[in-house]
Each structure stands twice: as C-alpha cells, then as structure tokens.
Amino acid sequence: MRDICAVERASFPDPYSLEVLSYLIKAHQGHFFVAADHGRIVGYISASEDAGQGHVLSIAVDPHHRRLRIATALLATVTAKLAEEGVELMRLEVRRGNTAAIAFYKQMGYRESGEVRHYYADGEDALVLARSMRRVREATTGATGRRARTALGP
Image (cartoon, rainbow, N blue to C red; front, side, top):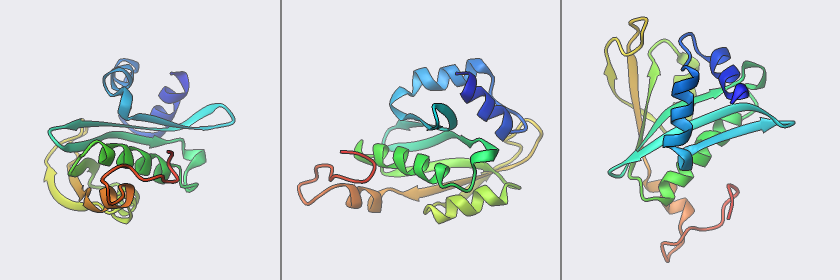
C-alpha cells in the first residue's frame, strides 16, 4: 500500500488519501491492477463497471517510470477485463490542462464526449473522454463469443 500511495503523491497535485485508495482496492478488486518493477509498485489503475459502462477511476505511473508503456499496459489490461465482462462503453475524466494525458487517451481510442465544470478541488474543469468497446470485444472474442487468448493472459 505504501508504494501505491507514493505513486499517487508523485502523480497528482491533489492525491487520494490512504483511505480513498484502500476503498478503491477493496470496492473494485476485480478492476484494480498494478505494475511493478523489481518488486516495487510503479503504477496502478482502478476502474468500475455499472450497467454495461466502465469507468476509469484513476490511473497513475511513477514519474521515473513514465514513457515505458506502463500506462498503456495498465489501461489495456483493465479494458480487456471490462470487455470480457460485456462493457459497451468506457469513460474517464481528465484535467482539461493535462494535454499529455489527453493525447495518450486519444491514442488509446478515447474521444471527447463532454466536460464537467469545476470538477477538481482547485476549480479546474475536467474533460470527459469515452470509447466504444465494440472493437475490443471483437479482438478478444472468437466467433463463438468466448474469450480468445491474448497477450494479456489466457
């Protein structure tokens, strides 16, 4: 838990508390994944599912481990898991000023679908990004509709 908190603090100006991170892990166990380097957690992602929609709640990678495709692997893993569960649409919120994250999410197939004014504690707006899961499901299931073997696991 200490490593997850350290990644969180290094990644956000308004990091989640230990209590919030503990809640994300417990409440979303099946959709909480970590990336490790030599036994130390260097990234995590948390997502939820409700009524056929997935929601990326948080994703963070230690600044010293960025640009190594860790965020790509984390997002791909949770996306495949949610597609397997029948999710039709994925969404997330991102700071309007976080141009690097917005570019990353667009590369991952997300498109702007709205905004939330004053979403963050400091008053910054959030862009809402979303993506259809149709192509993900097609890539991870065979003609029988069963999950196909992928690089993310059996």
